Image (cartoon, rainbow, N blue to C red; front, side, top):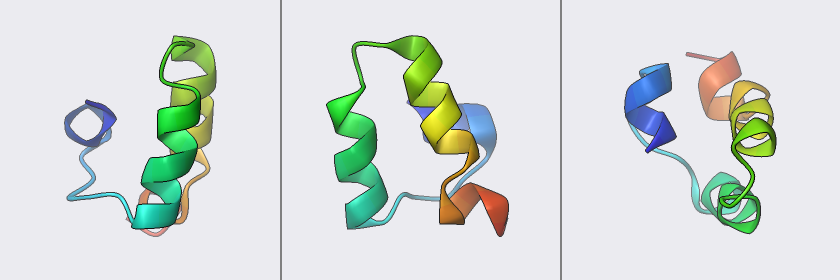
Length: 42
């Protein structure tokens, strides 16, 4: 999913749950992924 697209090894449980909630909305999914701690610190 977005892990490959954004070169993130894996999402934390908390981030994964947040991303799952917006999985049907691609714009929200990418927006949340881009501000996630895993991506920001990557």
